Length: 237
Image (cartoon, rainbow, N blue to C red; front, top):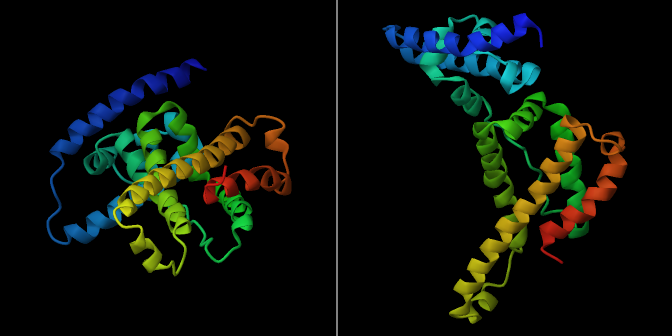
């Protein structure tokens, strides 16, 4: 690392502290403040997503993000507090998980694998979040929530057959509550295992560029991962 780069990294915390102090003194805008603040917040978030995707969490700075958004760094601090909070706010991603219920169970793992490959390859911000989550707890928390909140419900829907016979469920009597609790644990476990495949493969392929994983073709990756994810989705062992 060059002396200039080291100096820039050392200066960044001081820059953020100075910006935070300035932000506290920044007066509120009167008249039309709600609409203006919404536009300002959206502009900061858009600039932050692009900057985090381009530079990664560690190298991105509040000053650079503010410049991208054509705004004073103090205003970035006013809206988001610090870089970690800004990153957590910017990392509001939708995995856009597909509806797998219409597919035969044996095809669902391949379909979900293809979808994850599309998301990792098309969204630089998602890869930036993955890179940052390796070393930053805020990013790691955001990644955990992202998969827990979106993948869990998908697996829960697949675990509940459409049009299931409610009479059969009622016949279970008092045992139904226990079965439901066990099913909830099973869904959480299966969601976590699917995440190990999606996140672990992405880390090795796109971040670490581990060979020969990074060199696998799309078809080869799906052939390896699909059956395993299918097993996790269906709960078979």
